[in-house]
Image (cartoon, rainbow, N blue to C red; front, side, top):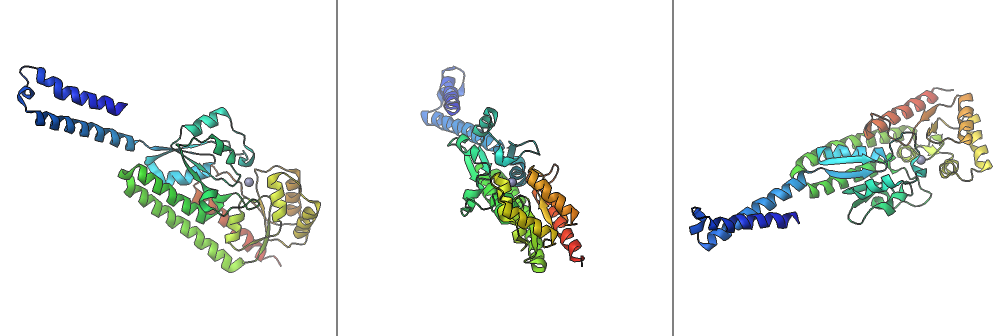
Length: 321
Ligand SMILES: [Zn+2]
């Protein structure tokens, strides 16, 4: 509509001017006027398309952590909006509101974790909005697998690449900057993977326990063995924590068979509180790892901080006779 209007203005400038007696166009031949019309149209359309690409692309994420990653790649070519703003909120059990639905429908793109984590948003995304679904991107997620995909550096690296690729097609003028930021991010992710390899070389097969699957992917890159996976999964799904699994976890704690307990503070369940108390009583180190990006931290900062805590707990318990 705007394009047609601009074309009309060009047409009027070219053809109306010839009616002004003293105007030089009055004596211009027809082909000159056509050339003027085409030049005027080309300049306005070109200007229009450039001003459209200069606008930052609007990306909406449910979780802050995914928008942090996207923003690091997009810089000023991207404007991000996060739907979960309260840090204590559990993304697994969020219910959409009309205002969340409106925000999703107005985006250029939406980035979802998927894997049942934030799938409620899927039905609220219009066809014309580009969708990044991390679980679909990887393709091998199955029910029962850990859904916290942002703890997997390889998935995050892949996501960063896909975001950069999409942004470059939308905004080719900023391609060099976007590629530069992607290279920097990839390098930092590589350093995290090297740290994980290092941990694996020293601690492969070391047994630990978790209260909820958040962080499981990071632990498995480090080669650590989780002794209470079904228990943690039942805590996450809020269904059927089995008494046998609880007894087995308690035994692992009281007999010092685990080197640390990874605690997700987002999950408030009496069973988790009991396990935490038992771990403290038996001097098993506990590490807090939530599933919301801590305020003021980047994804890489969060991962490195968590690896510091894990290394510290492993070294501490290694000294215990
Ligand atoms: Zn969780």
